[in-house]
Length: 228
Image (cartoon, rainbow, N blue to C red):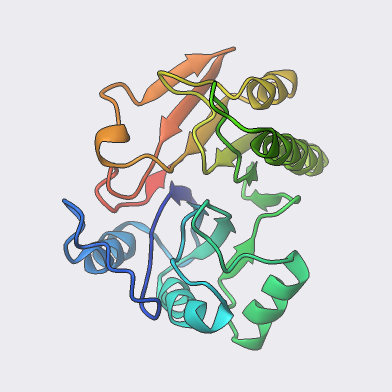
């Protein structure tokens, strides 16, 4: 049973938000399905790190989740900045159960064990010199959610892997408090998404505090889940 990850599927089967207008995204859902089924076995798990769907509500989300549920393996989903359908954990789990999306789980202030690994994470946020006070509140809330997830993960006494939608570190920005949390809990590996096109730099693996950070945006990894 292997653990994989990928970010930014940007599905839009019902929400009419085509991605193929962007360079490299033509027929992207076919690419995702083909590459996914080639690599991922039914016993495997894939962490999808946000921007799962352009849906605005559960009605629009249904076809996108049908697509995800039909793919092999179990899926753990984290919120991205474009997941406007996201609501309370209770409501999301009710939606999943009512529609028999049996392979999908939501990561939100919790943690999941996959074989000998623990999956923790949250959306995260970006801070820079132009950040408004309201963004600061969101950012600190995300720090709290990350710490809650890691604390849940610690109960299993297994190596913890962290997944954040927003990059916690880049060429022009560092989410200092998030990085300090990762450092404090001795996290060694963190995967993230969100970046596309010109936002992707040549160097996509950063190391700080002994932590490796790796970008797995859908278009960067050629629409292929990456094994952990």
